[in-house]
Amino acid sequence: MFIIKYKKIFISISVVLVALSLLSLFVFGFNVGIDFKGGALTEVVYKTERPAQDILDKSLASLGFGSVLLQPTGDFGYIVKTRDLSDSEHTTLLQTLSLNNNNPLTEMSFNSVGPTVGQELTRKAILAIILISLAIICFIAFAFRKVSKPVSSWRYGLIAIITLLHDVAIPVGLFVILSHYYGAELDTLFVVAVLTILGLSVSDTIVIFDRIRENLRNQNTIAKINFGEIVGKSLEQSYVRSICTSLTVILVLLALFFFGPVSTRYFALMLTAGMFFGTYSSIFLASPLLVLVEEWQKKK
Image (cartoon, rainbow, N blue to C red; front, top):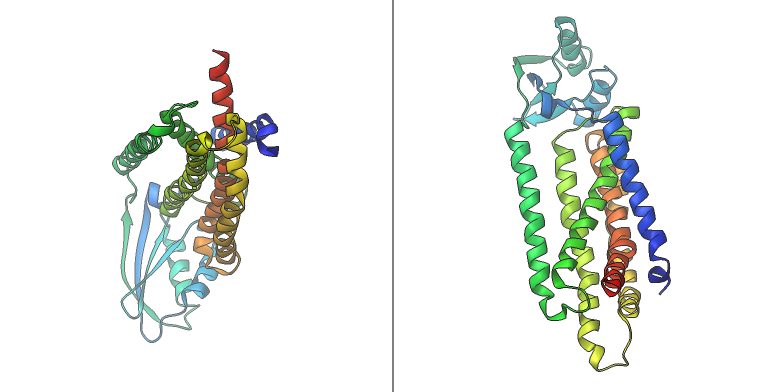
């Protein structure tokens, strides 16, 4: 019952964190990467052995070209995507890829390319998120239709969406700060991370809501207790499982962050933040919001 007793404090923490994230977004904005603004596409093929990608990643990072996407192709080649380059920068890129001529290569093509993530795709992604949110509300409202008292079943779905927005907004705010101070760039991995957070965090919330539903169904067979006590009991039965499940995923993501390639570092950090705050919201935000809504309904 500790969480329910101090629910306003935990909800206030979430409100402050989301507000700070939105403020950082409006103040700093995103540092848009190649996938969104286009750049130059270079394809090279090595004459003998292709260098390891992690070695080239470190060398390219020191050039100061910003985000550089390196993709293996064939048995001996790489496709390199960068911002638009001048002639001198293009020459420097080829020298770096050849490891200062220690690994001879042949340039197959060098072209300017447009953004791979266009406005139409962005609009479709936003539309998909809206439709998915509506589907979640409808699904939860249907699944919880037999426990529509004291809180209407559709409100469970609405609160699940609120927690989803919370779980996405805070990692996005963290990414904006990293973008401003450390040069992290918005790319397709960022979009993948956001969509992954949406899928992971809602499942945890639904698990706790389902425990509340089961306890509400059984309330006729046990002593009459109020809604806040039912939610508190449900949290006590669920939070250890939720924390342990999330912790196993977070440990893997931290390993990817510290020991994985540079290109996926921010992706791993975004997912780690999403898992952490997704678990927080399932326990300290979603359930307290249910109790707050029930108390508000009583006062009407």
